[in-house]
Length: 280
Image (cartoon, rainbow, N blue to C red; front, side):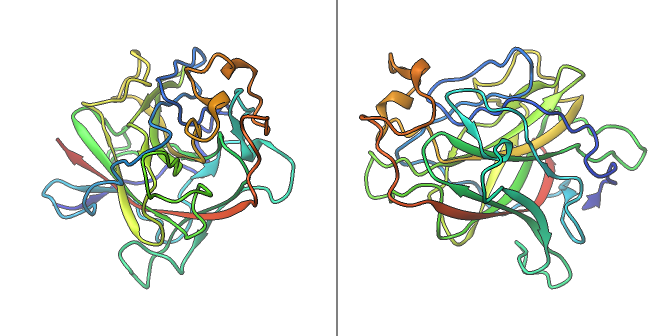
């Protein structure tokens, strides 16, 4: 049976916090404002099947008329990672609603559009919102549930490199949630974005969290959910940025002798649509 939750006000419970991009090992942010882990290169799972359809699936966000509370996280960057939305350099990332792109090709609906100008490794942009309440006005309990979202990355992509071999670092997406007053971090695993120009799925299974999650994350008390898009750690092409490299602490997100600059920026457009929840 398909149902739709009601939404909180625009930007409800927005937290300003540090943003960590994908890295080769889990990160534990003591402030509960961010953290992620994942493979920064090589082939990877680009998502599951289309959301919707299975019995018990409920709609969380459909982006039929507006952004439904999703906003950019503009928190300060946490070195060696750079949150593009925290910078003042043009072009500034944007998050907006569009009626011209819909995962189900519904002419009466739309999607969330994220635009960002990626210029180097370890750059990220995140969009997040308070989850909707249920029909009784209570917080949605995600315990024992899987949340699925549809993602579309345009042809500019998240990396200047292709997908031809294991040395590629295609960039990726992390689906995350934050719980409680401390905004304890929980996340799905890093997903390499190796599909450009078509919709794919990312999933957050509350019963199978990534190692980058905090032990105190509580799926029954989620105050925010979001998506972090990153140009990746670039460990394959930028050794200083790899989490296991001895020079990692000194990496400042700028080109170095062992981490040359990109030849050109990647003005990237990403769409998010049809966020649903299904019992496991």
